[in-house]
Image (tube, rainbow, N blue to C red; front, side, top):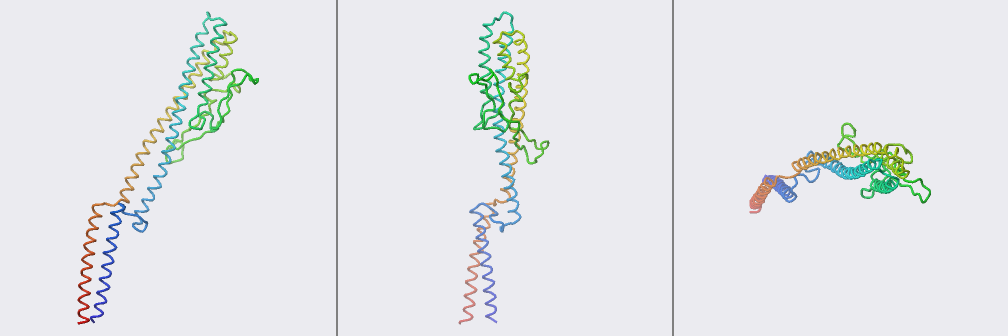
Length: 314
């Protein structure tokens, strides 16, 4: 009878001791790591929630990164078009002055040289790169979108040709792919839609064709062409200004998206912290309690086993 009772007592003591040891280990691990859950086995439901939040954080982070890059690109395009707009305003002012009947052929030849410089400046701006990518060639980002003709190689004078394409790249503003719901914004522009192509559409009232007609009119001392250039250049100014304003709207929309998603990202991190982070004071208290229980269990085990040995062997 004593041996059976002793065996049962021994097993009970061992079980209590194991539980106390396990509780102490878990408490020490939580205090040292600061995490309530470390592996799926610790708390399956909590770990599932942590994994879900981590996936959302990864997606949100990628969208924010794309939006920042897009906003930077769009801001640069807006800045370039603002500079082009200023050049076109200067060209229009030059046309107004040269339309004055007091101007002679010599005056207009000098003005033509100034207009040529304005054309060259516009081409250079239109061929601006953001990083390693050209901005105004659609998705054809590896080559300059505009080429000014080389008269020394037999090209027609003052002709600017578009070398890009008309395809578009977009970035996502939210989590749904719908353009109306999430707002997919274009981050590439086909520059000929704004500045023209004086080879394919020589009569368009856009920057490059209008400038070419103006320069030729000045060089030929053509009063009618110079007078017409005032309205044509004014139309080009409006086109550039309108597109610049649209890009400004796009950039503000993206900045708003970034701000909104950064707040959402912060909320997700708080949720993850609430799910996986341990309450350090409570965990420390449990660890102290587990240590005490383990000490009591160990002491009780020694006392009871000593008593059993005394009964058995004395």
